[in-house]
Length: 82
Length: 146
Image (cartoon, rainbow over all chains, first blue to last red):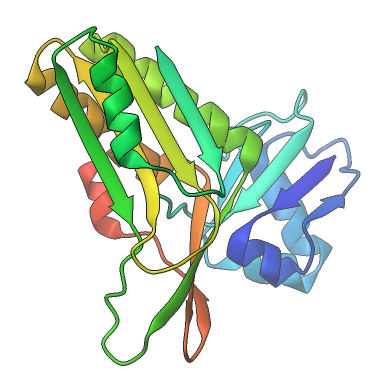
């Protein structure tokens, strides 16, 4: 699965994107977050303060959103445009 | 008619309003222009950098304009949002709404900017003479959308 990052989270992770193969039991956005928190300390820090949003294929997704058909997950801070 | 543009280059808002007036579809045209401000007291803003998620930003702006078009019966709607490094006083965002009656044009315009501020994937980073930091989401923007 392609994971892309933006803004402050991109800077914290230190890269624009990463390809990660999730195990079969990672089915929802919440599972993705739990998996990544265990994946390494940097992800843990990003998710620990809850100041993030997740989009699946360019749509904002809730934590219980199922990722079975998702091709791209974007992780970013709350938006500040306009 | 909906026109969505996400661009790094500057725009001429006078010309854009004139285009709306020239298309004599409806009489009420409302324009919102958001620009880079330097509100700092102890340091000086040198550049405002805007990052965006291109595919999703385009999608969110298009969907927002479509909702407004339907709800307030807009004849025309233009949204321009810039990205890249901008100077103080440079324009960031332009929203123009056109309807038969002014109230609908005002309401649609406000709806679009309020929705955009909490849903469209753009992020601001301020570069001052001392340091650089990401702008945090304004709680007032969140409250206004509820």
